[in-house]
Image (cartoon, rainbow, N blue to C red; front, top):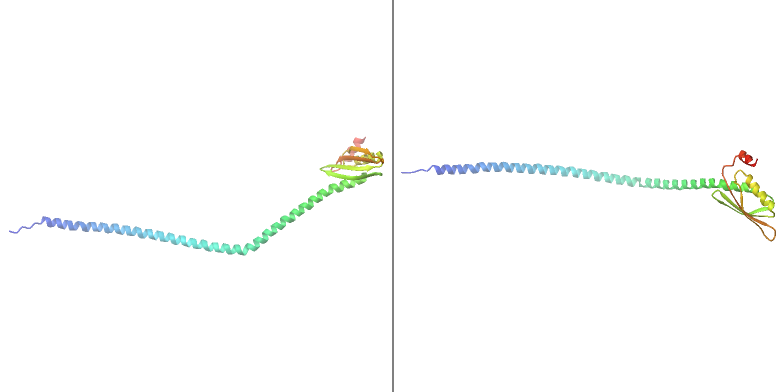
Amino acid sequence: MIKINLLPEARVERVQKSPMISLGMTDLNNYILVGCLVIGLAVVGFTYWRLSSRQAELRRELVEAQNEFRELEPIIKQVEDFKKRTENLQHRIDVINRLKDNQYGPVRIMDEVSKALPDLLWLESMNLAGSTVAVRGRALNETAVANFIANLAASPFFGEPSLRIMSQDQQGVFSFDLSFGFTYTPKPASNSQGSVG
């Protein structure tokens, strides 16, 4: 009698079918993995292409900016030279204006002092420090010094003179040293008359 065992064959068939199903799942996983890799490579490639394009564009802009700077460099230098010349001229104008302003005071002082000089008196030095004028001179008599002080006091540009030193040498010549204030704006005439009367 012949015995046929069908069970082991069925098991064999099951075993054979089972690897085919697992092989199909592995292929699906492989396809997914390959698809993800392709998508990742595509994203990386696109990003690389976009960044390369941007880099090339920035390089072109840099070259254009450098060329434009080279073209404008002489003009920029001319503008800087013009600014320096303008500053230099403005400085000179300021110095001239300051000299004009300062010139008015000494000219006025010299004019007023020369008007106040009496006969028999001469000046040896005159110094201006701020608004104070110091005068040193000589006279042949005391009356000339007194007249000089009175004339200075009468000027609307001077304050009351102060005699600091007066001495007489062996030849009879008087040396004097006096100081008084100076103002650019003259004193009103009514005040000076009111103080005298």
